[in-house]
Image (tube, rainbow, N blue to C red):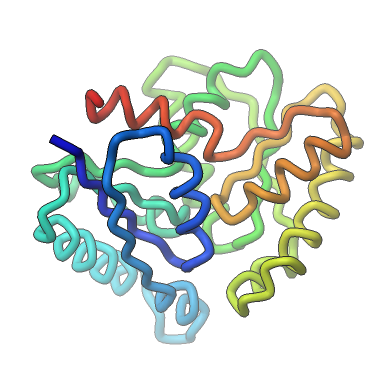
Length: 219
């Protein structure tokens, strides 16, 4: 029987990335989009507890929608969801996990690039925790491409891709002994463009996602 995966997004632009990445799998994708948290996270009265409650409420709702697994595609959501504290009866797959595995397997230091400042600390914490569980002493540092995330949140997709590409290229050229990795799903087109222009491999979240899901879901 075909597996059904509920995909939890913070922005509608991520839908096409997931559809393209998982096209080869025999799965049905059901997309859920909630941009609210990203829009209110800088409000003065916004708290981590509010974000955790909202993410858990949505995950509970998706889990009841007759899906076999949930894929969380937003690094802000994955950074605040702790599967050890709030387990679910179905697999909850974080978009970061295949990328973390790729970074851990590198034979060179990594620069993990972000556009969303709210995801940097949480994602890096998760990355080092993931590496520690594998007994890996990881050498990785974050880099924020400032003033870019607002573009995608306002629907300026082409401007966002160009701005992120322009930000990634100097990182690549100035760090020839390190692997630059794009940490967010929205950065995939820019990572691919920067890789093509510089002739240097740029990691992104979609490279190993299909393979990872096949292993986790046994499909």
